[in-house]
Length: 100
Image 1 (cartoon, rainbow, N blue to C red):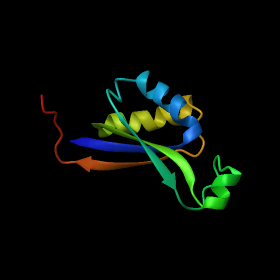
Image 2 (cartoon, rainbow, N blue to C red; image 1 turned 180 degrees about the horizontal axis):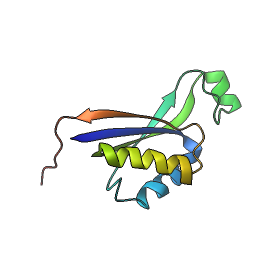
Image 3 (cartoon, helix red, strand yellow; image 1 turned 120 degrees about the horizontal axis):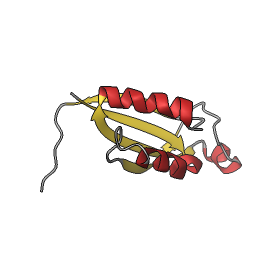
């Protein structure tokens, strides 16, 4: 079964995270990035402007892969990459395809 792995990182880590994913096509053969705003108690990379506005500018990555690949990617990010403040979750994907 396919899994949607969602990663959310502070925007300052967008390029490093994208580069890391591109270096590992065995886990992330493709991905989508989205601009996001985080709301909550996290203090990672919070600027003065973000303190005032009450939200953190972030980047969300969406990767459709298998569950083993998603778990391997999370493990690799924890051990090989510097991504403080990274949040992640996995969701089942009932179906996936491309129109050609």
